[in-house]
Length: 97
Image (cartoon, rainbow, N blue to C red; front, side, top):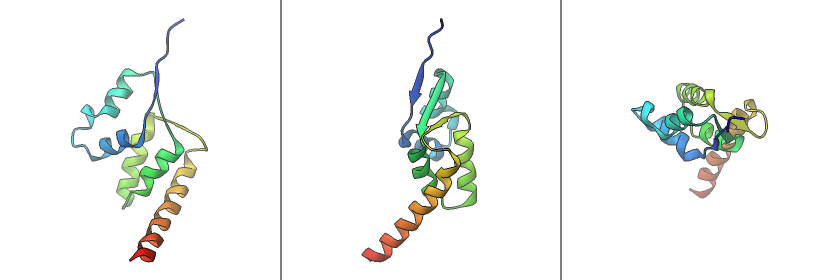
């Protein structure tokens, strides 16, 4: 039986990929090429979506997760969780300023 190598990726790997001008050389791209399966959590996905400031950023983030398995609750909920996280951040900024 063939060995299957999988990896769990943390938020920073995705964040670096989104910020990179050379996405083909990012750690995410290399992981997708090397490993049989790449995974992250719905919490990590929500964290990334909460930092999106425009519809274009949301689309780029969605595309990035195309070949990545999202573990936890269904992926579509990460968008709603990220909206809640943004609202909480807004309220915290108002409260502490």
